[in-house]
Image (cartoon, helix red, strand yellow):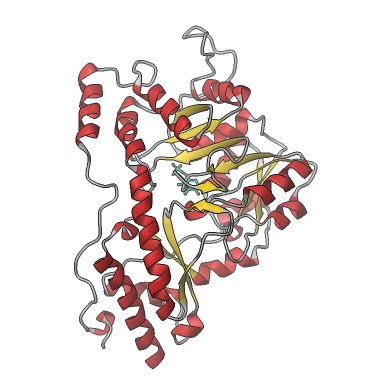
Length: 391
Ligand SMILES: *Cc1c(COP(=O)(O)O)cnc(C)c1O
């Protein structure tokens, strides 16, 4: 069969489910409520506080502070822990650049550590090697909705006296040994940016059980105010990093739909894991042992060029796109981000760098498609493989 790229018929011409999903009646109602009552800002309305409490409760954390985005959430959590100039924070190499730039915002130095080959999570052994006298915190990233190994990372963190700040931007609803992502460290940060599993277009939250970290985060995101203080009392330097009531209105109903959406994606992941077994050289990365809920924010696929006629990953992506299956190239290793170099110095991360050539992503909207559409992913992959091998 001729590849669509070479003029053949594409496997799929229909589209994919939209992300974000169509607005619900409840989202419209709450959004209009905010619009009409004129209390648009977090300090005037009640929805941001209600959402902060409800989200924190949904992950089993005591406190939540809603902020403008996930990067700023990470920045605030680190600042609240006292991280600043002269300090170091260890971050994984295979993650969104925001994990590292949040550290730069605090004035501290991000130390880029390699990831483990099977999970692409921060490697506890690398953390152990890189932790030094200036290291204050470690930032596990729950990549794609799979929690990082909280036990192993918690143990190295304890041994070196480091705080653990979870980057849970991709892990709404995920769990590690039945403990929700968001409760696996000192503080955790989620994002509500457009691509995430819960979204208001933009937004983020810091959750924590630690009262002092909560109060500090709250103050820093609200121009240095104290909860009980006056409007123009600013006992410390902070910024306006507050979420709006509009965002909270859009987010609140999603607490009721997240779980069902994860179940849909889990089913899709199980289907693809089984069906892709027939396509040698393209495999869904499994969650590691200990994962009790993989929220499948993304489907990470490992591509073995050797099984596809030696063709590079970019060729796979182009051929699949022409067949009607959009897949994503994913991250470059942070060790190769030149803009970070002046802040991080050189870092050698062979595993994350190899992932640049061998890992591709299925976005969550593909994982919410019906069985026929999922079967198209497999059919397209098999077709591309045959054509690549035939030369
Ligand atoms: C999205 C994301 C962030 C940043 O969140 P924003 O809301 O876009 O600032 C940080 N870390 C990871 C792993 C992410 O996926």
